Image (tube, rainbow, N blue to C red; front, top):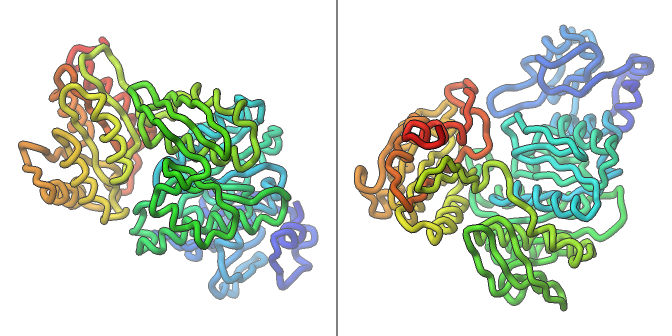
Length: 502
């Protein structure tokens, strides 16, 4: 692709057009270490690094164009464009370089504090079961037609160049429907700009990532950006709408000012798509679905009231699209969940071990509440809270565990550059606020492997041990290093040490 054409399609003006007439460009890069000859380097300011400090390295590596926000150095030997926002330019260049692939897909964005990944996988599963060719970008994995790839980036929503190239691969694979997890970071940082969203699901909005957004109001505003993105889709015709959880205060607060139509879901009589007579069990749930003027009997194959809500969100989205629910609903029952979500680890033991990604106070409460009626003995939980992230949720998580579990072990969960002891003390403070006593109701074991071994060793017949927070993740972030980690493997290791599964 010629540089001049790329800039034209991205809406960026190059002061000296002559140098761009014959220049062929490669990829769009924001990491100078990845630059190859012909690539375009966009200097982006991050939370820990500033791309403007690495412009010289990008040029030395062969960048054909540099995009900056600051006044460029006078000795740059390649064309340079100064823009108001590098992140906007990055997203526009990435989409232009990939040929604006979202224009050729039906794109659904899914946002919320919890339930995004399950809803993404479930929607893909139902549509695929009905004969649609689907793709998805999620915290856990990417799907491009029949091909699955693990998400190794440790980001739920990737940077815009990765998003756009993945969407382009979907177009090449003749995918019809793309489902994209749209996190608050992804929305606020324009990572999903130019995704041409046709519709959206808002699962719930509680509190998370305040270390980035600053206030809950800003976090809410970031989530609302998805509805604006649906409105601003100028590429395609069709109904622009969002399926929103009416029962969740945070999600419902977006409805009065929504710039697009809203299809509400929940269990209240005011919801357009609602569930009645809900019966939750160990292997799933059943409920009566009311959608418009019609009633259906629905079964989900994954346990928990929160998964009833996830199912309702997907059904509301399909209902809003005018999809035949008679054909769609049978596929809800055949969905068996997401890796790292309510995953049972069975080695023949007389107690249960469950791995789940729950890493917020709300999601931890939901999982513990789900497991309680399925527990004939004690409910034990091992969890932590990520370092260099929202500190506000730590004591709340400790409080939740103290109220809903019989015994808790607080341990590391990606401490990053933050002192582990500080994180665990803040969780413990929340537990104490609920009346928990160290030694009797909880203990602190910083090393996660040791904590899991200890938690499983405490279990007796009928107990349930929940390992929360890591789920599917394959690494532990500690002091600037990424260490290999597999929660299920460590759990099986602990079980083998007790004589199970040998």
